[in-house]
Image: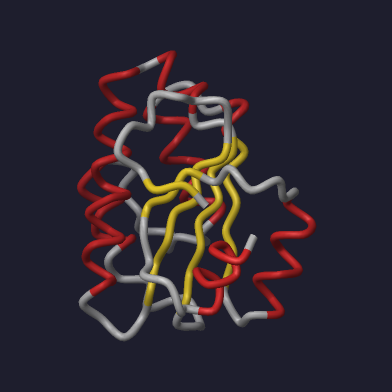
Length: 145
């Protein structure tokens, strides 16, 4: 739990993490608010393809109306975020294995965009971390929290 708190506080490097800490959405929302981090949530239970992923992330992160519903537009919006207040953003993606198993090629594209978004924000005054929480053991190379 300490590593998770450190991410929320901005004391640990922003990153793409596999969330293994037993924490539910209600608790994580409260912790995020307490530590002045803005939490966005994706319920991956119904995200089975690119279109569903793009729609879910656009809704969760309040993307502007001009979002183009494609990979390039996703990367553009994720590396902008001017419409959002705050300087620490956390994206909790529950059950990413649903997308990963139903459309593995598009999942890898989405994962690559999330990874490059985290890297982009590391060079700025804002931070962006992604927490992947689920039963997916295929997230090789990701640090765990």
